[in-house]
Length: 241
Length: 241
DNA sequence: CTTTGTGAAACTCTTCACAGCG
DNA sequence: CGCTGTGAAGAGTTTCACAAAG
Image (tube, rainbow over all chains, first blue to last red; front, side):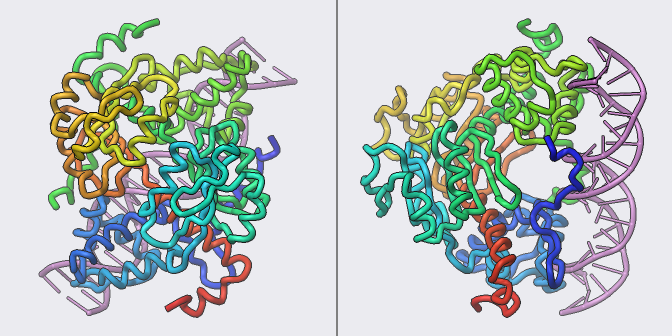
């Protein structure tokens, strides 16, 4: 469409008024992993950790870890490592987890209910404040200490509860409409579990969690590893045409 | 550890005996998305589609789509576009979806049960063949036409049912052990829903789906977009210490 | 004339390797 | 010394822009 020759349109708010921070997306995506690992170390009473050890525990390479952390500032001590608690705090702050964000879940099928019940699915920083479904039979039911509301009340409740993040767990046909309504109500961050591509205006962050896509990526690799052993011939002859 | 100066160790089986295929990881990760989009077009009776239209529907840019598809071969017709059904078949074949892979789910909590019940969470190409839990109270229960087995029988049943993919939906403490046992039983592809880093030997594919990580990434962006409006000052003063 | 397929350029991310600090 | 923080090199990915095909 018209988006052919737009000049790149920087994702993620690169620079800004004051100091230009601009943490790379790839780094942001790993910070939660470091945070979880550090919280584990802290619970085990470990006060400091080297980049090498933290990297191993988080499953990444140590140079990458150091470069990632360097984007937050110089929080390490040469010859020693990183102070675990201090780093927990700094990463939490960077991720915006020093305050709680209100979350709404839309779609109370199996998955939506599992998400709502999964109380511990968020250590801290989030609070599920509203649940929605379109089925009048479900409206009024209580799940995880909340009453399921009809999706017609979405805008109203998003405003009242100051919802910052919407989690879409509806069937795929309903996902785009729910998404539009969330955006209309002012939500700018959406976690989408529905197997559907959401069209959103610029400035809205969408992350998707898609079981069948993950499985299909795995299937590709399964097929590959099978090829190593035996299936080679099948492929070479055109396999099943 | 010892993984410091290993020479890169190529992920994903780059070249092989015959022709070197080597589809980039980034492309593999998008193929399922194209596949789903194409299936939708096919169901609506659309016989051919241009890269521009398919890209828009899949939410990517058309040059990227063309380059991705070019890794599979030259399946388009210049001046016309791509034959929808033919492309569905080619992508399915490339992803290894022309046959069914047996899947086991370990951990029958809320999430595990939702996954097992989510019959349609896989269009085709997969078949959930076994469910496991460690809780004797759950063993024997029927979920989604299957009987929950005790996790002690994992190896036995993985062999008997020829399980290709393991889905870990246990609490995080149990994840590594389950993972080890799956690998020991010969499973080389794992989808991990537990919020834990899995240590695996080379050659094992792990994909993780992690709700709290996704939310935390969103929180970062929420905080960012807040900064645009008002919260700027809070940050500058050290916010909430 | 339309649309693919693709070199080449641009950009992002990862890894190396080491200066420099504690 | 040991370990961080980082320039520079390398790898991977995206985008551009256009020649060639239908």
